[in-house]
Image 1 (tube, rainbow over the protein chains, first blue to last red):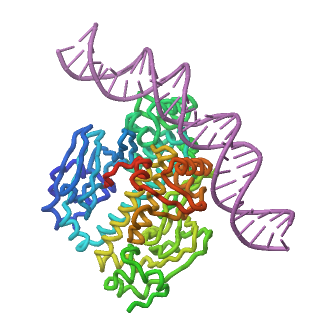
Image 2 (cartoon, rainbow over the protein chains, first blue to last red; image 1 turned 120 degrees about the vertical axis):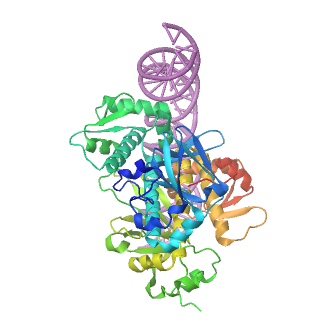
Image 3 (cartoon, protein in one colour; image 1 turned 135 degrees about the vertical axis):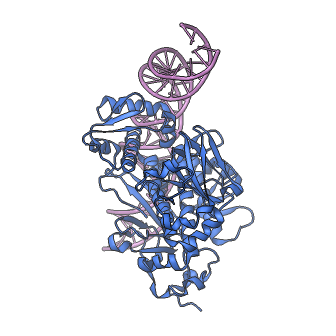
Length: 245
Length: 245
DNA sequence: GTCGCTCCTTGATGCAGATCAACAGACAGG
DNA sequence: CCTGTCTGTTGATCTGCATCAAGGAGCGAC
């Protein structure tokens, strides 16, 4: 029914691909078929889109990418974490440059700018979805700011694990009974960049949480969470989720 | 030509009111005139919009409002700073609640949700402007995250002053020759909440910058900046501005 | 096997900024 | 006038995390 160049990626997505997916939004995208294309990037590659190459919006189909800001002296802060279904790219602004560091193999589908602007006009509900997604990102950024500005190292680690667990659960759409487990898709250093810490502190705090029974580790990356409530408590999140503009 | 309820606010704005201003965007908004209304809030008032009261998008006409997130134990982090021309409100989401703490008298113009959604369909270029504005906010949030995660106290203060100076300059659209001056619209405590510091540290670092001749103070709030370049250097910002999704 | 590499952990020490505390100026109300 | 409140400054001390440093586990190349 659909002729995806990368069929696997969209094959089994229920909600997953939020941006503009030929599978999820056949009708709207039918007319855009000719300008859609896919690109893939290798793990560890740093992708710089700038100038005229910014003239599209892309959506992550598989893999993970992170956005980081770097200061002249090398201090780095991750400011965006892109999982499948997230989108990148900035319509209408070609001057900006940004880095996407793929930490695993990354596949994106892209839409070039000009037709995208037309799309805004012709299919307003897609425009509205894009706006909502952007507002979602803004929500996430604001929670992230609370984390960076006010949380302790231990709370930061607990928060990160719970964030990943939540997105993971949403992605797979199944809640495992009892304890749930997560594979951290980040190295300790990437976690540090995410959290505004050093990698040593990340390592220490993970060890501490393990020692206190909040989490347990198999290997370096695989985390089991006996009690999500306990973890959220450690994260300092108040239970009622919402806030935002 | 236009019948504003609060005419003063839009009277002298060239770009100022970015969201949807009857002065700036006569044509598009002509058809929305009937659903536009104004609200004002007093200084110090905390405004909570939730439930059905979220069913609009508002835009700050005058005054300043800040968005803060608070943890159970009272730790607070400012996550949004709303100056004139900024907009608030989240179309299509009525569950979220948020606080707007007005630090000066605040006037907003609002658009209710339903007509707003129609607007997305009928006037796509306004929809696109909203998307761009949201992306601008996301940009700002990401710079803010770098500040919170990686900058020193001194750099944070210098950054804040330069941010306010920049927005101020953009608002008034005139560059004063030589040294430029800014009135800080925030108390030391609000600055601390903005920067993820304590108010004592804010005070100390401002004193230090003053002692080192980076800024000079008249009163507590009025700051003169002899050299913007020097200030930016202190802020740790690399000169090429851009980055972002 | 050894080498080299990346990723991770743990220990020892130092410092930036938090915390606790005192005080001063501005201003309003009595 | 005094008194209370709010805002801001500055000092003394404490501490959470950074920094510096060493070493271990996993793994591919040879």
